[in-house]
Image (cartoon, rainbow over all chains, first blue to last red):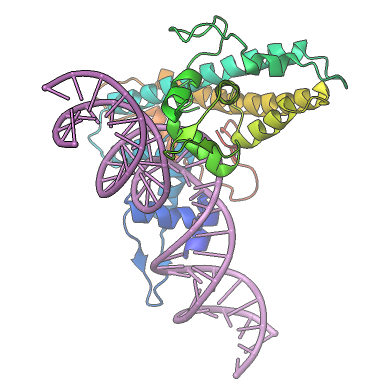
Length: 150
Length: 150
DNA sequence: CTTGACCTTCCAACGATGGCAAGGGGCATT
DNA sequence: AATGCCCCTTGCCATCGTTGGAAGGTCAAG
């Protein structure tokens, strides 16, 4: 099977298949005489696994771990569960952060007349006119310091 | 004011201030004789605006629009509201996508014994063994095709 | 044999940020 | 004045996952 067919069958683009091979996520593919990569159904199976994991938001590094567990017949499901649990914590943190943003913004939007006048509470909030404290924490109600990847 | 002081006062790192200047988000700064960038309180005010907008998840491109509205005394608040509303829609879409992932994963985790045996419903789901239809939509209950940036 | 669809490799870009390195300025203490 | 230290300057690289393009080789059908 050529890479294009494997891509269609798995839902992983040919570009990404090559990339995954290059980065070591998947083993180097066999080649036909022409130099074309040659894939089996088992390979496609693995690509589908990868795609599904990516759909669930796992990073490539996590997928690497999941793949090796998948291939390990003597694995312990606790290991899989641990990875998944760690990941869900990250997901939930992102959700919380986005929700915070969304709610703040929603409040501001609700206060904005949205007409032809220039006065706008959204811009006023962004100004955060509090000339006050360079000292410590920002004025209450703010969205807070978001360091995490969102 | 030097860039470091402006950075501390605004919460935008010196790196990012230079980056914003380079990409045209902010005007090129005046320089002192020494070659150091020189910032005013008004500049810091603008940096704080930018940082606040980023905290709310606005992209740099959106911030560009917001900034020009901010500087436009004849602006219409409807324009601001439109940008904010579009952004909140994106935020909510991301949230929905992440929630979908989180819930799916939560279900799988709940089904996983998490012991020393290899059997694991999480891996089984990732396999998505349905050899069935390359035809059209994937089997029901899946997390669906997530094209959007999450 | 030609054409078009596919494959190959390599290189670059995105967005926002951090890090490192080499060289110069500014200021306070010897 | 000289030393030391911190800050500034520019520039390049890395991240992370993915997509795009260019330049060229292969395959199968017409």
